[in-house]
Amino acid sequence: MAEGDIPSDEREEINSMPKIKDTWKSSQWHDFVDEQDADDYYQKLYKNGELYTDEEFGKIKLKPWMIFLDKDHFKEKLKDYCVQEGFAINVLWADNTRYTATCYAECCKWRIHSSRLPDGITWAIKKIEPNVHTCRGLETYNPLCDVKWVASKLMEDIRANPDIPGSALNELLFQRYGVYMKKSSLYNMKKLAIEKLYGGHDQSYADLPAYTKVICESNPQSKAFFSTVESESITRQLLFNNIFISFTAMWKEFLGGCRPLIGVDGTHLKGDYGGVLLSAVALDANNEIFPLAYAIVSAEDKETWSWFFWNLYNLLKESSRKDWTVISDRQKGIDIALLDVWPTVKRRYCCRHISRNYKKQFSGPLLYILFWRACNATSQFTYRKAMEKLKEVGGDSVMKFFAELGDPAGWSKHKFDPNVLEECAW
Ligand SMILES: [Zn+2]
Image (cartoon, rainbow, N blue to C red; front, top):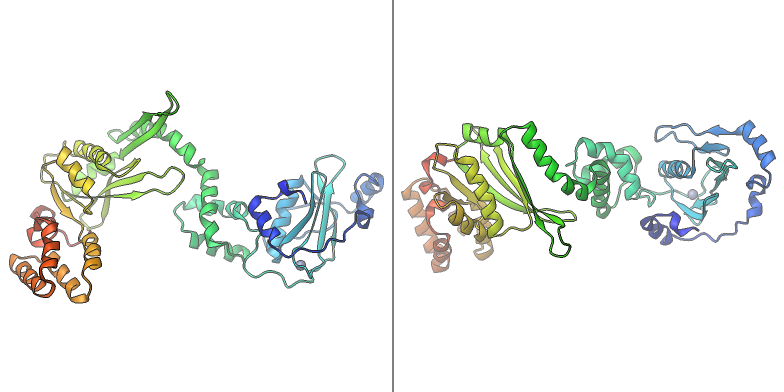
């Protein structure tokens, strides 16, 4: 077997399969051995040869004398055929002139042989023997459905919806081809398809300067900033540093129609380069999420949050409003950054986030219910009642937790700024 001919992951699968004791000798194929009987072969080809025509999956047929444009074309159709018929192959021989494979099942005698024609390009199937498999075939997993094969089959689905989850792709694969892919391979498969469609992360990062330029030209008044840093190892090599984007429609409509409440959060990016996505969102009149701005930075720390808030602050300074509130988790970088670049902004903390920490320290449903009663208290009276009960049930340790949360204006409804009251929990 020519090892270089088979992708490494596929080779692994094939190697792990039961091997057939190979008793094949080239003389068995004497009738069709290339070049040895070229004249006779051409006569037969003239009489029997048939160019492979594309058939939809389920109706693919392979037979002797079928002609393919080249070796890749043959291998591609052989793979489709094998998946359709529900078996895998064991490649016995593969070079630039000959290709021989058998069914992977030890008990099965099925074998295919094809070779290059004397024109040096075209390939033809010389023999398939026997016509039917003597094995039971595979169930819903076929090692031939590797990352490359599946990516090529689902390319258009991923193009139409790049956010489609892996599980949905697996279902599509099953509906159309009757096979599932291993969950662990779905991510790599999607990554490969996205790379083929959009050029991958390398190309995308390289395109960012042009992208910010296009945003500003095609969406006047949009804010799109891109910056680089000089590499320390390679002189004068510029590396991506950060990017900030707020389309005109985002920041203008925010100023025109949303309450002065901005939710910010950071999330780590997957992929080859990592980094963190920082986002700022608001609530519109229907209490639905309204995007305001987003940025990509190398890490989530005081510096990057300061830079992000500075850009946000500059977006909003054209407004006559000054009563902004920023809501977020209790990450220290955010508080320090706001004190630094936007000290006048009011602060609020995400109670769901606090509740997760709270639950880790204080178990039991009663303390949890009382926690939310204190957070959701809309009057001083109900707040005081909830806190009294918390003290009674949880004692000093619970009181210490709440003291560390700081001013209730940051987490209890009764103290919220009336301009930005809302029912939605952040
Ligand atoms: Zn078989």
